[in-house]
Amino acid sequence: MKQRTEGVSAAFIKELMRRIAQASIARDGGQDVTADDIDGALNEMLFDGGRLNLKLLGGAQGMSAG
View (tube, rainbow, N blue to C red):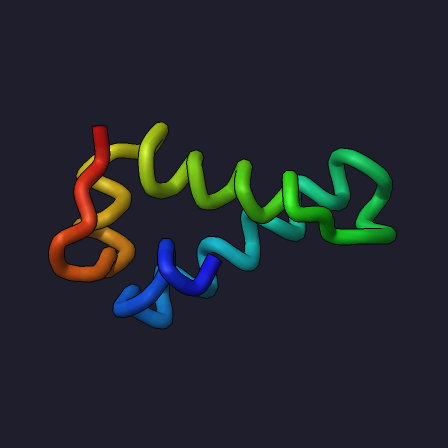
């Protein structure tokens, strides 16, 4: 995860944590956070959300979305 989030803003990390928590709550009531929760949230923010997410949430320089 560090390589994929290096240089991002605090707002990006806050939103990432919110999405990870939502995924965990939806999956098992928030009992555990899994690697799949983290990967899913990152993919949603970096790729599914596209450049707008990166711009609004302070993605690192050089990051690009599909």
